[in-house]
Amino acid sequence: MAVASPIDGLGASPQQRADDVRAVVRDVLSDASTRGSLQTASATAGWKNGFFIASADENYSMTIRGSRQIRFAFDHRDSSTEINLRRQCH
Image (cartoon, rainbow, N blue to C red):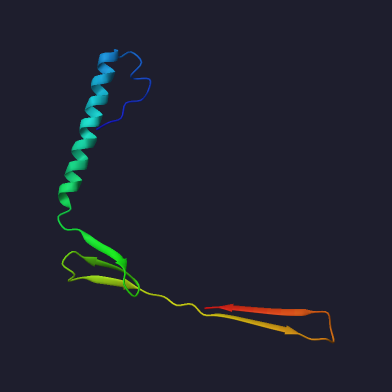
């Protein structure tokens, strides 16, 4: 389906433009129903001891887990005015 430029529609009658819009809407709805019919089984997703995605029959699944470790150290010495801060994230 080719998209017409705005200049092409200047000479068209209001009825012709309405017919063109109807044709575009019909094409979009047809495409949407075709795409919906291609999806035969649905997947599930959620949280069960980590984020998971699974097939409807649960033959295939993927669990995503993670961890983080944060360490903060502060060193202040009275002999100087310098404050040393170290941060380390993993």
